[in-house]
Image (cartoon, rainbow, N blue to C red; front, side, top):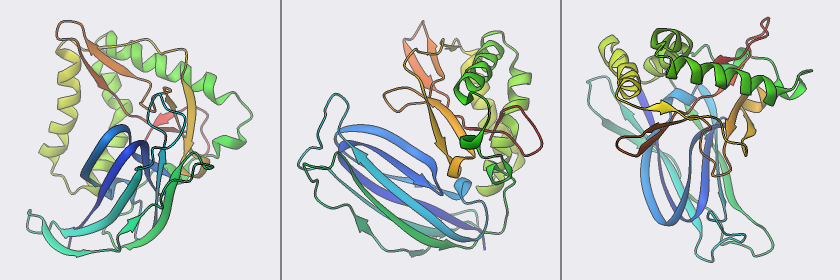
Length: 256
């Protein structure tokens, strides 16, 4: 069996974030409502208990939660052994409570047990960045600027070398073939070659820690990733989500 775990969620009138095992799955500001399904296998490092945390904040430009704000979620399990999505089961469904005017957020935390045929070599082997004796933000900014230079300089092979471990883990967890994995990475590079350029880091960036202190990323105040790719000809924008860790025994950030 190749278990494939998805979170089925809805969000209404809020800026929301969903984390699996303290690592962000998605964040977005919704002026209205949305419902979607997202795979979560890439955030399941190994079999056992997994933690889900959903949190809703006031919509962008607002200081209070809307009266109708809420989030709903559940985990569905499929079997990918045949190459198709064969439904297996669903876990309990949860809803956040009605917003309290005295509390500027809504949220809910739960757990579920996963049984997967892999173990990812990921951030669990990193140092605790919250205990670091160096300026994490300053070191991250240097790393981000290095990646921006690689992208804009057309050094795609060097960029891919740094991005490869993240994509390798994704391919393992999502049961992707070699061709499918290469196609995913090729799509990212194709966009870069197609006129997208990485923009300079904004001044309002901040460090967001995750992975119980072992992961860090730069975010903008709109909760979106700090690296943005823009195509001046089409006026389109892409964001490049990345998280970083420092493996035990090393002293430089790596993409994971």
